[in-house]
Structure formats: C-alpha cells, structure tokens
Length: 412
Image (cartoon, rainbow, N blue to C red; front, side, top):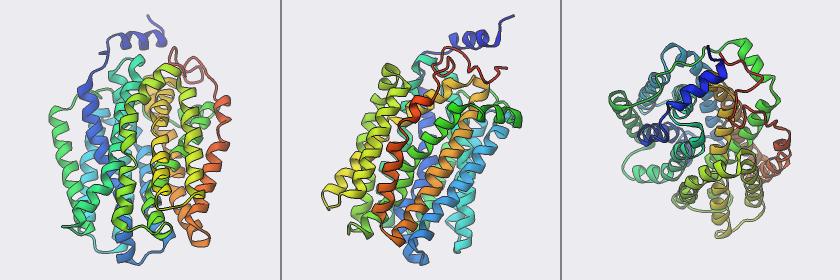
C-alpha cells in the first residue's frame, strides 16, 4: 500500500502535460470574476458625484467588496467539499452575475453597499477552486506557466475594465454597465456547465485543527504578508488610481481611466514570461525581483509628479506586480498536498485580500483627506521594500519546492 506522498506522485504521472483548453476556460471565468469587482474603480468618479461621497467613503466601497470576498473565500472550502471544484466555479459565476443584475436595479446607497458585500462573497468562491483545478489538471513542472496564463485574467481585467466602462458610459448609466457584466457572467456560467472540464475532485472540508496547523507554519504568514502588500500595490492602488489622477494630478476623468487601463497592457505580455522566469530561477528569486521593483515604483509614484512622468510611473508600477502572483501561487501550491491546497489558498488569499484590497484603498483615501494621495503611495512603497527580508525567513522545506508534501501538514 503506497504512502500518501507516493500516492500523490502516482496521481501526477497520470496528468496531461499542459492541457490548454481547461486553463483558457478558467481564464475567461476569472476575467469576468475580477472585472465585475474592479469595474467600480473607473465608475467611482461617477458614483462619487451622483451619491455625494467623500474620498474615504468612496474608498470604503472596496472594503465592502473585500469583506464579502473574504467571507466567500472562507466558505469556499465548505462549498467545494460539498459539491466539487467544477460546480463551485459554476455557482460562483452564475450567482455573481445575478447579483450584478440586481444591483443594476437598486436605487439606494444601502442597496449598493449590500450588493457589494454579496458580489464579493460569490466572487470569493472562485479562486481556491480555480487554482486547485489548474494544478490538479497539469503536471507540477508546468505549474508556473499554467498559473501565469491563469493570471492573464486579472491583467486583462485591469486593462479592459476602464476602457469598457468608458465605452459603455457613453450609452448607459453606471448601473447599465453592471447589467452588461452580469449578463455576460451568467452566459459564461451556462457555457462552462455545458463544455467545461476538470475540477471533479472535492476539497477537504475545512476543520479548525487543520486551519490551526497551517497557521502555525511561519512560511504561511510570510506568504500571507507578501500577498497582502502585493494585492495592496496592485488592486489596492489600482482602485484609487483614477481619483488620484483626477484630483491630484489634474487629469480629465476619461484620460485618467484610459491611463489606468492601458497601464496594465505591458503586463499582459510580461505575464507569459513570468511563468517561464518562475520555473527557471525559482519562486524566491522571482518574488524578490517583483517586490523590489514594485516597492521602488510605488515610492516614486508618490514622490514624482507630472502630466508626463506620472503616467509613465503608473505603467512601470503596474507592470512590476505581474511576476508576483504566478510565483506566489506556485510556491503556495507546492507547500501543501492537493487535498489541503484549497484551504491554504483560501487562508492566504483571505488575509491578502482583506488587508491589500480592503484596508489599503480606504487608508489611501483617508490619507488623501488629511494630507495627499501621494503620502499613501509613499508609505506603501516603503512598507513593500521593508518586507524584502521576509523572503530569507520563509523556510524552503521539501514541500515548498514541490518535491514532497509539506512536513508540517499531514497528507491524507
């Protein structure tokens, strides 16, 4: 009878080397998942003006999304253990679309806020099952490339959300933009139900003892901290970027949204190479390069201003973040055996999303009220650079390099 580690290796020998179709299906679903949340960034100047919100109140809308998102991540393990990863992805996509349609009919601030929490909750069901489906269908030596392709979704979302919002705002109110995205999400859910592949395995039901054991691993907290600052530098800064460019740099709203969207364009090209870089130089070095450039450009974005230099720095800062997530998710996936991978991804993403995308946007907004947007960017850049030494303390156990199960987490 094979031991757990041997059974994992036997399963992996039966995996296809690099099946593209299941990955691309998930890319489209992940794109709609993240676009439905980040579209509120280019819509924020319109929403703020219509509802009379202050900077801090506008930024707090993203906190509501992240509260819901964290709740969804927390519940994703229960849903995926009851259904399976494929059905969890289907539930996430269709219910997310339904919430967007309901929000498009809501006329009150209270309804908007409640909808944002629900939107985040149903969106949060996707990521752990999406990562588990990708890594469950593909051999470990190709994880970096596969997860890099999967990361095309947020990069495409960051590019197209402002452009899509501006295009639709020419013909529709901001609530109409939500209705369009909701309809697309429901349609994609139907297509995935008919033609999607993979994700037939159920997740391990979350247990307090297992969560406690994972949380005791110092490497888990290293990854959670790094994910927090990277999500903050990426999604957190992105959500407040149009307001920063309009109110502090003095750009027009249309130009600000165009810059925010196009700034993610180079990342789409770089993401193809980030997986190759991760597989070639290793997780730790890829993460170090990403954190160093990310912190430096965020710092410069707050220190150096101008109608020409600021857009250039926005592009460089956005591009620097691309390499982090393929390396980060690959490293995190290698830390834990398949039946615990969903829970580990959920726990790290909960911490990273709540702090990075939930706390940082309102923090930048409130700093803008008492000082300036630049002060928030400078502080974030300094913190990012200060966290670089953490990479030396994240233990390179056999489970982290993918050659054996993580020694601190029981397999099976």
